Length: 79
Image (cartoon, rainbow, N blue to C red):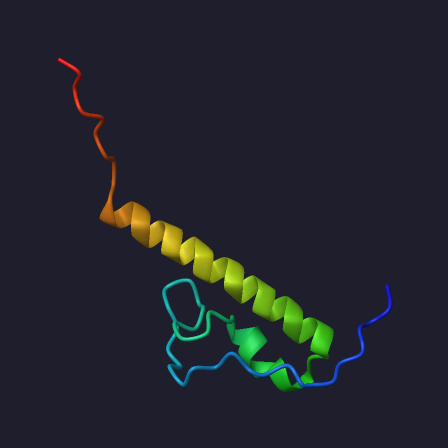
């Protein structure tokens, strides 16, 4: 698979909130330690893959927060 020609560099997802959660992901950008430390040496394709993974992590986190807020809604009784 040929790498796509890039006209713009892939920007870092860093939000300046550099703290890690219990799973080892940054709470600001959701990158792992290795993803943060190696960002500058990654190719644009690797950076796009990290961004894709961060997006998946954010969606998973939002789903979990929603489940925690509404643990088990009860169906109303018909009688």
